Figure 1 (cartoon, rainbow, N blue to C red):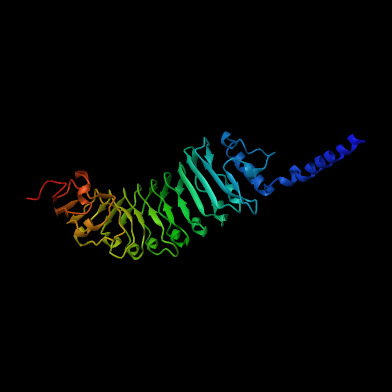
Figure 2: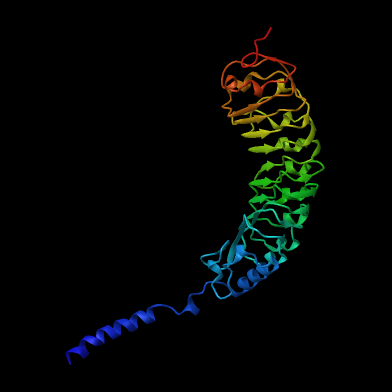
Length: 333
């Protein structure tokens, strides 16, 4: 009788434990529509080892390189990086309607163009297709992704001109189009961004012509136009009232009088090397908290202003000019 009475509490506790845990069917977070799309993406990429965890018998919210939203349980991030994957971006990525981040990064065997189905991803905030072998034009339909804050398309093989419609993206913080094979001019519309004023990285392309004067109307924080074929006067990018911090215009064929340029206090990085810039170095340069300065290989003349941080930069920041002189270069005669 005593054994029976002690057994009942144990039995009750055991049953309580069993019913306290939900059955596997109730604990699955993965949305079946999303799972079907992901498995299609895996198949279209040739079932790579990188996606081995994408097992149809498991919960897709716990698969590698994907994330589920905690509230909706819908896939909101697909971040494929440093993968041994060959082929093209599957069109099926456009069938993940809750996607906020899409990344294919450091995948050198990824080829083809940006699929038009990406235009359906209206919730997308970050589009990062970089360090791949994607080619073709940068598509106009990207301007439909109004929630984008980051557009990163650098280190690819994109050709053609930059779509002017990118300026219609109201939330962009940064545009990386550098290290491609882009041609034509910087769009006039890039001086008319409708919302945020993004940092622009356009270096290592074959952009030509003058920089549109409309860019002088905006307060950019970073402009990198280096290693292109740009020409003419860009002094309008500077000014006492600007907020620019980093500006790299090196290795172009820009030509203007630097003597007349006023620099904002915010400027910390100025690279103008390998251009056709003439005149003197303005005295205002010595008042800046510069971390980097390079004006070499130009047509500058006169004494380097003494003071501030200007003498902390070595000879290579100033050499190969017409007649610059003074520390750190030889004394003026």
